[in-house]
Length: 110
Ligand SMILES: [Zn+2]
Figure 1 (cartoon, rainbow, N blue to C red):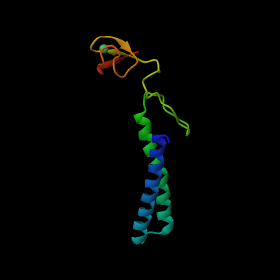
Figure 2: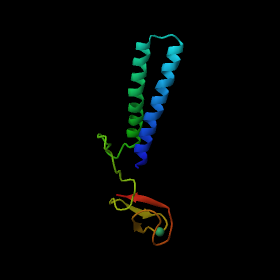
Figure 3: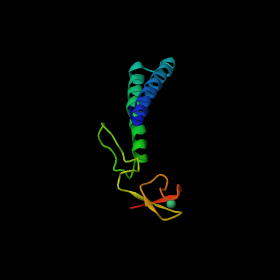
Figure 4: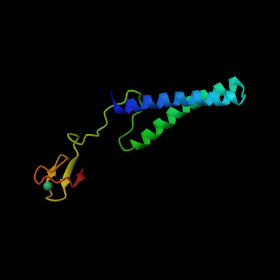
């Protein structure tokens, strides 16, 4: 399973538990059930949205993903067209360790 999707489901579960906790607290305080339910619904809707927004901000520069499907961001540097220049021997390679000298010191070369 996609780890990002897994995280998203985790957020949903956490917000669900959180919502129940809020409802129980509000009920024990004697708040009108209708009001507490609407607060819980609001939290349940806003929390995942905020988490997703934060996730989107992390992804800034990758163009974002407006759909729910989501997918494959070019996190794996190999084969994306970006090349790296070794800082030790200036050899151009595809990222990771330098094939010539084995150094991991590198910079992106666009
Ligand atoms: Zn090198």
